[in-house]
Length: 376
Image (cartoon, rainbow, N blue to C red; front, side, top):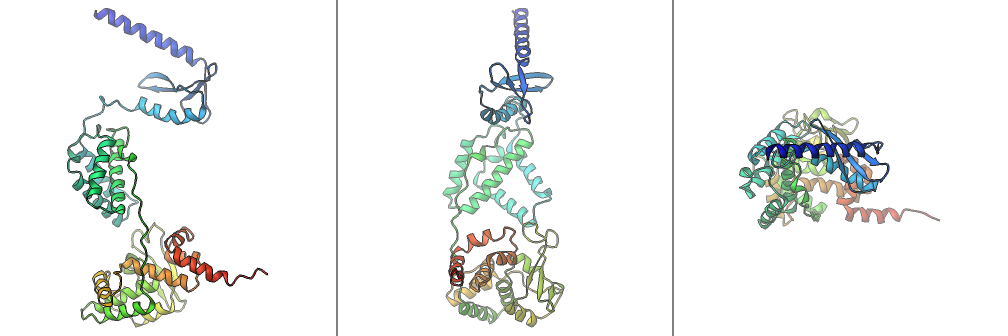
């Protein structure tokens, strides 16, 4: 039976080759789309590709160019990518290790972003303890859905879940780059909707009471913590930006201050530095700060002091970033236009984020500005 089987295989190969030559004679190239052809007689589209020394011609089964453009990349991938039987049996532990290396050496990730990626990776591994021992090539979207359901049952917040989902997708993208998978099963999972946090900021009187409470806290760091709280609220800086402001960045003569951010990567988003005016309240604060070093501030965190101060004053607990929100709302309430506030905050979107975040205050500002419009 062996010789007969060989003859049958040779005959089928010959028939297939003749068929390809016959079809190829009628195929015309599609401009701008590599390896896509159209049969001039029937109008059917084909994927024609040479792989491992063989000319492969597969019908896409459609006469619509739009449909062919969608099906063509998937068919090419299925031809070029190895079959599940050919894929190496690589455990997810190796893929995860490669992903860790990717995080460590990625040139565009800030140190804080790398820390966050590692934190979310640890959360994924804690919630899916079996993942490192599973084969990378056979994991399905159903198993990813099971992880999602288990993770959400722990009471995790929507932002936390979205961060872990992004990390899980990154792990599977690493598996694809390693050649052990053809697809990403985590792409079918949807991110959770993040509800916008309602801002409950203190009034001017409440803020001044909070500052006094923090400053008279009795700790050796009470004065420095109060200075940091005031600086964040009067400048709109992020905490990391405020920690890196030096006296050489402050120009009282021109009334300007340079915000440089991290010494290596600059401000958030890689935007380099920005310049903001020295507002009257900020100038008063800067002139009474002691110059103990080249840095303006001598405390890089005041979370505990804020938490204690809010508790003693009966205020809603605030965070460092809430003080940035406080600055933005005070500017909008003072009549400053949205694009200008956006520039002071270091945004690059012209004010879109400001409008989304402070819509309540922007509408009040809009009504006030409307009263100034004269149409007749």
